[in-house]
Amino acid sequence: SYTSTYTAAPVAGLMPKLRQSLDAFRAYSADQRAKRQTFRELSAMNDRDLADIGVARGEIRHIASQAVAYANHDAKSHK
Image (cartoon, rainbow, N blue to C red; front, side, top):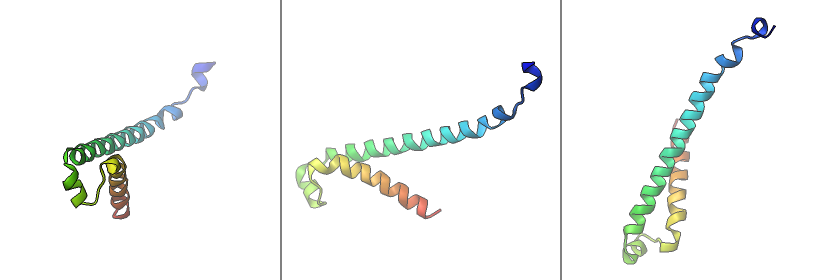
């Protein structure tokens, strides 16, 4: 019968997978917050200040994404 052949093995592997998924979601959420914060800070600057740091207004979204990607790569290489 079903009850006599059922084992808990699939369930035992569930918790590590859930933890891994939760950790990945938290990392993704942190990246998105950092990207939005960078975007907001750069967007708040006037064109002259942006030019002083070598950024065109149209590049802000790309720079925010790249900053998060670079920070993640840098953090992984120092582990």
